[in-house]
Length: 434
Image (cartoon, rainbow, N blue to C red; front, side, top):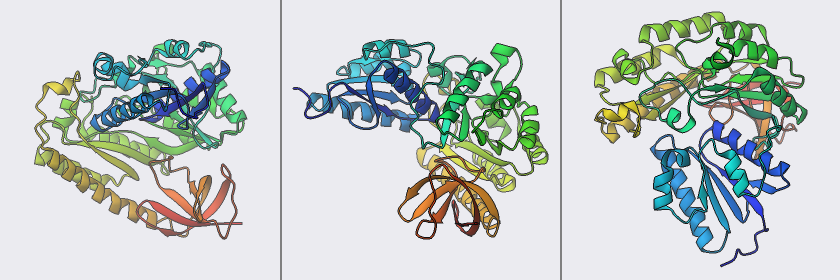
């Protein structure tokens, strides 16, 4: 059967998973456009490219379901071709070819030239920074490195993304300048581990020097750091954060657990004492810093005592932002050799307990913001509210500031001063200060 009423030769890129995948899809779309292709993101097209996630069970399930959905559309004649790329395809290609053979072709995370060729496009090496951003126009992700050299026992990312590879500073600056020229005002730096940046190229941790170069880019007002690793954290980054107003007083540092026995089994290279000392230094050197972290509960061998240690630590540390995940038993990881011995219902119960504690902490910290004024960027309008964020909040995962759109007109991407008048667990309500 032929496709019904869809525009011919329009390529629809569907993105699943994390911000690194968003970035990769944007690069793919930029390359396709440079070859004269008609390309859209999560819209309608007769050719579909699914950029998959293969990180944990829920993400893998969503990716498989999306592939099956588009294969069914192909069988129904609603689309002509389906291509699959990304982490799931990298990790499980032989299985996917066998189980879902009606996909036209599968590509791994490093096979962009091959994917472009299959789509009738050429890979253009000179396209530094030429990508089609899919985020709101005021912010964009900026990937500064690919892959990871860390040995974490639970993580399959090195299997899917390979060893750590930093992008040279000059290339990142060129990309930042091109984004700024398009109106991007906030750069969200991403990598599997920002703190490893530069070790392969410059033989030293060079994140601070990269930040020094990026703050000079005209038009950029905020630079935000995502995904830092606690072991070997380059402390000169904190000096730049304190000194440069463009570098947000914000860091996303996934800590995963705090019980020493679990940290050792996770191969995190740190202890409760060292981690607590590091966070204390963060707060001393950058008193205004917002710290976001993520935790894993239900890791093999996690006892009730381990969990109580974690609970008490979360209560004591009062993180501004925190997410909690249940452990996912991933084949070909070091932890896969361990018995996945915490029942699923206990994993979920533990995650819920952590998030209940965090919800209360977040509510208390937000109450302290009432009456204070913040610089807020406007991301979008929803119903009767303009939705914005402070420098202490990252898109999609953190607090949002809601401003009554019936009283004030604001533009997306605009920065404005907002006084907080009301606060909930994860939402703030404010009014514009003239």
